[in-house]
Each structure stands twice: as C-alpha cells, then as structure tokens.
Image (tube, rainbow, N blue to C red; front, side, top):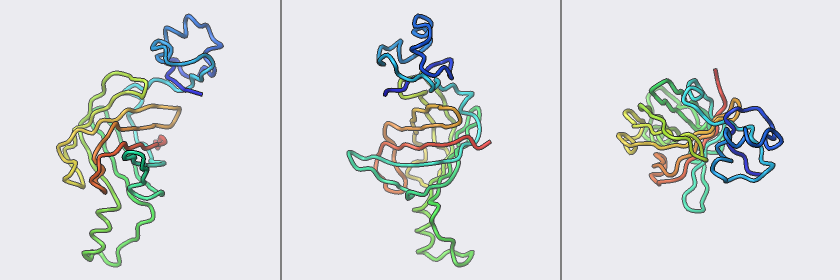
Length: 188
C-alpha cells in the first residue's frame, strides 16, 4: 500500500473523507500518483517541524544493489536542526572505549572509522513525493572528504519520526557515493 503526504494529517484513510476536499489538500492525489484506499496519515514536512533534536534509530547506505551499514547495525547519535543549521553526530554504538586518554595509532584509526560528524547551514526547497528537499552546505566536519560539499536530503515527518534519504552523498567511512537513509525519533 503506497503512503503519501496529507497536509491535514491524522485523518486515517482519507479516501473515505470528502474526495473533492481531499484532492485539493493531498499532494499525492494532486500529482495523480496514488490509488484509492492509500493511507494518508503521513504529513507533508514543513521547516518548522524539522526543528529540534532527533535520536537516530537506523542508518544504511546503498551503492548499486549493495546495502551496507557504514557505522554497523547498532548506530547511535543525534541530529539537531535549528532554524538555519543542521548538526549531525552518529557513532557505532559497539565501538570500544580507548585504554587511555592518549590514543594509540590503531585506536585513532578505529575511532575515525566509527563515527561521522558534520554541521552546516541549510535551506529547504519544494515538497516532493519523497519529502521536503533540504540542502546543507558542510562548513565543519570530522572528515575533510565532505567539507565544503552540499548534502542533499529528502525529509519526511511521520508523527514523532523523521525519515531522511539522500539521492547520493559521499559516505565518509567508505569514500563511496551512496544513497544514505536514516530514521530518527524526536528526542526533545
């Protein structure tokens, strides 16, 4: 069953509602891309809905037909969105603490490969079937590979969850350009 954005969220099976009113409000039906009976509980994202702190639930990358988990299957971390800045810190939840405050070379390499952190000013654009388009210009990062680049994501809000998907970005841990998807839950 295909889900789509229903601007006045929370109406359940909106095709049982007033069809003429629904067609004016439902972005999926305006584009003609959804069949009768599709659920409309997912709402169109607005910039104001993105603001806050979000705890990561999952992170995966897809390159071609290969799915990977660049920080392992047990990722932890947060994304914080302000009115003009996007902050992201994800780490492998299973990484081991260093033995001492001064890292060995091997520990330093392991730490670098087991996290990603960056921040940048962002802008939002049009609502698409994939979500609201968000473009962040990275101005500080744990990896120079992504410094100065634009990170483009499509963001959808579903209740207290935020789903984020890129059309293709550099994954700092692998260097590959991949479709990156992460799911978050409201933390504040």
